[in-house]
Image 1: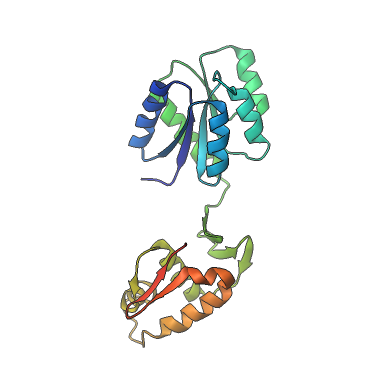
Image 2: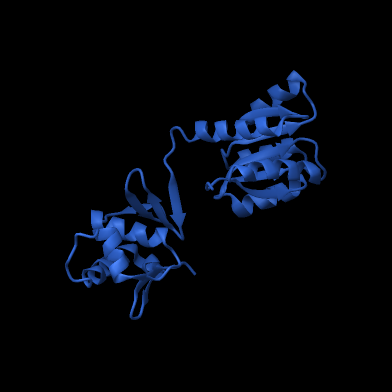
Length: 225
C-alpha cells in the first residue's frame, strides 16, 4: 500500500470502475467524480491528499478543459487527460493549459497505470516528502519539524520521540515501549526521562502540544481531534 491518492474524473461509471480496479491493485487510494462540477468540489475538499488527477475531457456540466483551467489557477498537481479524441490540435491545446500527459481512448489500463506511476516518480524527483499532521509538518529527509510553516528547533532525541509518537498516532504507548524504540534496548535509565522530553516537546509545539495526550498509568498517545 502507498500513500498516493488518485482523483478519477469521468462521466462513465464503467470507465471509472475499470480505472479504479487497476489502480487499487497497485495500492492507490481513489476518489471519484462523475462530472466537472463534482471534480472541482472533490479537489477543493481533498487538495492536500490528491497526488494525481485522471481527467476526462467530454463531461456534462463542466468539461475537462474548464476543470483543468480552474485547478491550474492554484495547483500544479499532475494531470493526465483522458479523451476519445486523438487529434494533434487537441493534444497541443491540453499541453498549453498545463496537462502532464495525454491519453486517447480506448487505452490499455495497464499502460495507463504505468503512465501514472512514471509521472508520480518524475514529479517527485526534486521534491521532498513533507507530511502534515494537524499543522505539524515533518520533513523526514531534512529531519525538520515546522508548525504551520514555521520551523522549530528540536534536539535529535526530541525529533525521534515526536516522530515515533506521530507514526503510531491514536495508539497508547507505554513508557517502556517508547524507551525500547526511541532510546533503544541498551538504555537502562529512568523511564521518567520520557516525561521531561515530552514536556519540552509540548512547549515547543505550542498549541499543537495538546495532540500529545497523557495516558494515566501507561504513557502517551498522539491524537488529533
